[in-house]
Length: 542
Ligand SMILES: [Zn+2]
Image 1 (tube, rainbow, N blue to C red):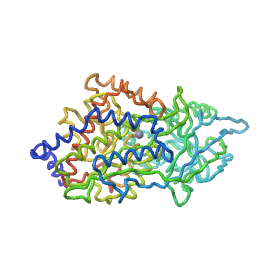
Image 2: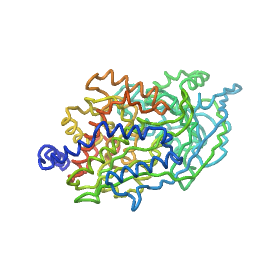
Image 3: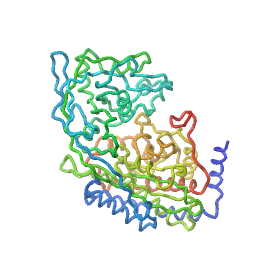
Image 4: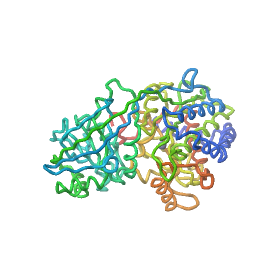
């Protein structure tokens, strides 16, 4: 009941706070296409060198953000500083060749084309010799669904091979997990964590584009790029010795050798009574790690609240990208204009709107630009372990990532739709713009677990990642789907993610920023603490 009352109060404020209405509308005018274009043309330019942590590109990026926050009138969030040092370790793994033996036969797999494997251990030499391979279905242990892919399998010190995603996707059965929507059990991060808990030496996921949500080029690329970890006391000894992916083709070949058809096996593994089995194969490889300790930085500014400065709404958009790397079509700078230049611009524009208010919000507003999101949400994970406002007073995180500059959209798509009562507040703000709220049509890709709001979610704070993405006001849904497809296939995490003044249309991002400002504004002027909905896997005590 309390929850409903809070939402009602917000509804009332949305419609009745006349005194602040002109103030709000004026503030929103600060969010303009020219401001966004100016930011993205700057942040996405070669000068930022692809914004890779630990490089000169980091220095340039964080100094730029500091200047922006200062000029907006946001105070340093970390004492005297806008920077929060994030101690990390950078590991670059290299492998010559992966060998799989089946009795007298030997198969050679090319790394990274067939197998995208790395070692997360802080050890220079990681020799894996004849590690027995065990197939363990989807690699899931989910007591609430009565599911245990590891039951009866002896995998201590062995290598587990698992499918990506969860059985709900492939059967379409809505009673199985969450149907097509990916649960956290479907994420590769979960599969690595669970395999390590089970004591496996190595874990390999069989790639499949729909279930992963991206093509094999993505894990391939990250296996030959430096990876970052937060510094840990055990030098990552609690993680598997090696982790990675097989391409779909490589997996099909290997499984065929054992008389299995991967597609059929996947459907078998969707059955509750299915049990994994030894593949009668042994994998050998030698991974050399070059290891470097270093500090990267989160950047944040704060606009202190007028009444409850010790409570805060946090906005996030990661600043990092992939720097300078493998050349494609003559271009080696990974500018990340969309990932995540447009969202950084979105966040700065929101900050500009807040800073322009005559009357500051009651609660504080934090603009946080986390580092190392691309490496597994590391900057935001570090921040939520070292927050400037205690977590119990951190009301919500409103994040964005990869905002596509394709014009005004009818939809406001909420990733993790149905998880929390934030949905209702977004709906009110969306309706005010003549838009509708929708769940993610691609919820099988688990986007809710794939950007910085998830670090807050893991600490129990209901958080938002929403944007217009699937229904263009001008050209409709099919057109929007084509734009997304083009971006994912040709630009996402590739040097082609460049700013193009001709084609970038910021009008939709203006609306998304205005919406996120509005949502944050209402929450920052209320006593409302969002709650998880029943059935959310993040609700304590379920
Ligand atoms: Zn991103």
